[in-house]
Length: 267
Length: 354
Ligand SMILES: Nc1ncnc2c1ncn2[C@@H]1O[C@H](COP(=O)(O)OP(=O)(O)OP(=O)(O)O)[C@@H](O)[C@H]1O
Ligand SMILES: [Mg+2]
Image (cartoon, rainbow over all chains, first blue to last red; front, side):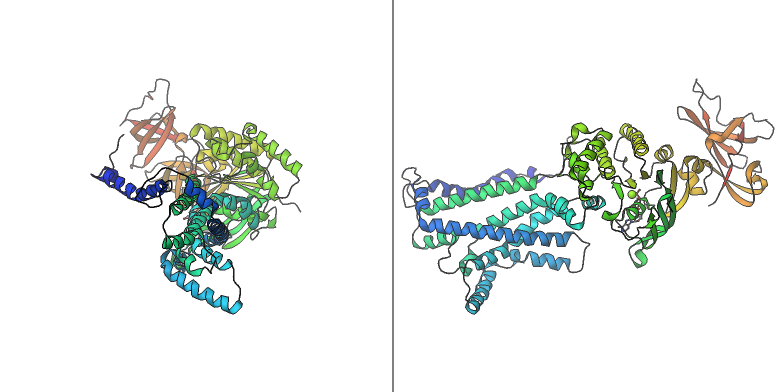
């Protein structure tokens, strides 16, 4: 019974290299988390374990403000990009192969391939132009920018879910007197839902994390949590930043865990 | 005027692809399926059975011809407007709904009142004996149970015609036989016209009121099981359903001379070169010296339990297989290489087209 197929895990040194890779990935994060409890301001010294920095960050009005803004932007961006990504996924999978399909895929995934800094500069110039012409300011620009680069992240899990879906189910719905709309509403969308939620969460996390585009597009007083942290770093490095980072890390881990749970289950 | 046909296909053609790559899945198919009958489409893989079913359901539009339901042209009516339901080969149960929700889906889409939906769903659950499973997700059911949900779901809206595309092929033998009986019972209880697709000839013979035998996009013959078995119209039908012997002969009135020089009786007069067919169980072994019997040599004996296949060679080498009941001792008293006489049962020799 024990068939000895080729497996990379049996190559000599595989386990060692895997361990080293894990360490390289997680030691910095571990250091960050540990030092967020350090009572000393300077990184090199360890005082006593404390929650002071968390309390400080919590009480900091700027942090609160930036966090709220980050969450607002991420929330809107996730909803907008997921709605668009769902339509794009339906449009690209629910039909026969067509000319220019690859081109459409490239278009949708464009934000993954164009260097972010290029997009950032481009958006800054465009939005700057619009702002001067219309005189309209506000968070909308950041939300739009985030929604745009979140689309490919939302698109991928939705498309995967759609491609895994048995098309006969939609035929069966039509056979049972469902109109196109009812077929979508009662069959396609519910089955698609785990993919949609996963896409939205991925988009949310990606938006929450963004620095480059936000930095270029934001107006004065529109700091998000990451750009606020970047600003603080330029002045002085305090463990408060570590505490904030750890908080951000927790949110991300929670979201990603939920994402994997949602996409793992095949039914 | 009330139509007596539930479904009528008139010169239906369905071609897939374009240019040189065109496949004629259905090639001028005309068939009348009567109200309330259990009609089976039988044929080998790729002969167009599913395609014909999909055209009746409305999932596909024909390239040419018409499809009528109760005498009304429904050729271009979308599937959700046709009082026709399908039991899919893969069942296609909605994974996000419970058994009861699956069954009530069609009724809800038809906009039936809530009370009626509930009552009908109850009734359907009872009909397929799944009352205890009403609240379960369909993924928690066995293959046979899923099959019954698919049936109940398709029957719930009381369609005029129920289409079944090889619904039993995924089940193991025992369950399949049980479901065959179940299906027959459901059809008789509901009185709904069933159009059943299979490539299993035994299934077709035992279940159907009438059978349509298909091959290469064409309907070869339509008739009752008995008609098709005893009077196959052509070579394909004769060989696809059951086992048979083919003999080439020159017919002259009610006599036909085989290549071996032997003369056999025909019940339908004919003239010219013909292909004859005779079923192995209609070949009788008699004493070699019996008057009027054909003489053959026993080439081989194959024991099948209930019966034994005797492979015979006529004087010119033409092969004929006879099926004889195995005696209690298991030894038919026949010997390889021995000479024997053989006769064809009266009326058993049929002329078939090519
Ligand atoms: N969508 C399609 N595009 C191209 N060719 C098709 C399509 N559907 C069916 N065909 C072709 O039409 C022919 C008949 O197919 P069909 O599915 O009706 O066969 P079937 O009798 O149901 O066979 P099976 O017993 O294997 O299910 C086949 O040659 C098949 O390849
Ligand atoms: Mg088929």
